[in-house]
Image (cartoon, rainbow, N blue to C red; front, side, top):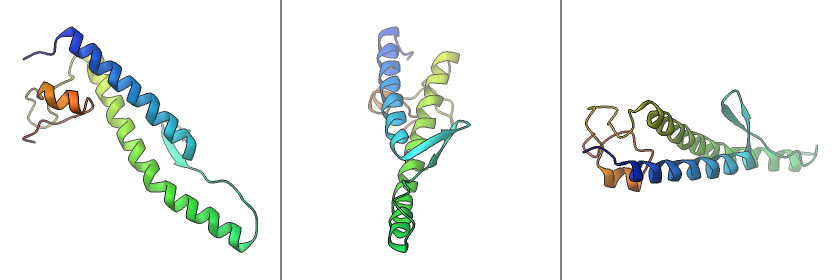
Length: 114
């Protein structure tokens, strides 16, 4: 089974949409630096309570930033694979990934078995 042109275009559009959403969400809590993101926080003041608020905000945003960045990396990898003709093949066993899996998760890098 090879992915037909129409389906491939639909998957690419889904990936580009997801990429834009991820970048938008990341920009709200982090700043890009050399291809990665670093969580930011607002400076709300200098007293102890303000500093506590800043630290809480940072610790709340850090795992979110890491999750969004990981997903963004998966999307970018999928788009790169589309460009070089290796999209739709499992990273582990090298077999084709089921089209249903790719439609459910266009950035999938492994088949259901793996």
